[in-house]
Length: 328
Image (cartoon, rainbow, N blue to C red; front, side, top):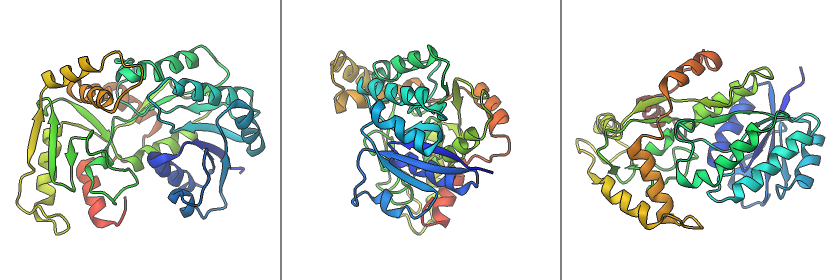
């Protein structure tokens, strides 16, 4: 049977997991689209597989279309994360390339957020980047699409070096390596998180679904929880762990109040370009308001529909996996 060619745009950290899981399946080949194909790129240096092709592109329609046609790609996934309106320009070009291509009639744009249906304008920079493109997608029928959401990437709970996901210590409340936490709000607000490897495995399942079988939004979640609970689980897990200098020591926690976050949101409201501080405040709002918690009922229904035999890892599972392996 001929393998499907799955195109990945702007691979990045999460995309590496997706690439590996696609190659772990006998059903897919991978096409990597990139602006820069340099020897300095660590990811490209690790690729030694005749089922992977790398093509340089400027993400314009004239550049993308011949690549999709000559490779006979069937599905395009984007990992291009851009908080500016340029997201719309780039993703519209991806969509048009799919529309005019001979075979590529499926698209998963770069979303990977929480409950985008209940809170379509959150974080606020999604309102000027993702939301306009969602409307473009809804207004066409030539290309099947789904917005894939997973809440937090669970790998951020791990020490650096255990995952491809680069640490985001300022944004993510828990710093395993520094053994400290800065909790926004009370720490009891509901969150959802999914390990990056499971996101990759979910993508493989979705690529195998028959045409016409996707829903407009797909949710995958490894676990629902709170940051207070997660810290407690980490304290218990690492209590007797040799690799972590934390034996018997609680994780120090500081708290950032909602009032403080609201002040930062007001200060940076109306920015024409999203500043680091403004982006941080919007992410913190997502935490405190629970916007990153994917809807449980729909997520579980879709798990039964698309991922019935998949075992999703919880936080304890991921911690154990990271301790037993060099890399998750």
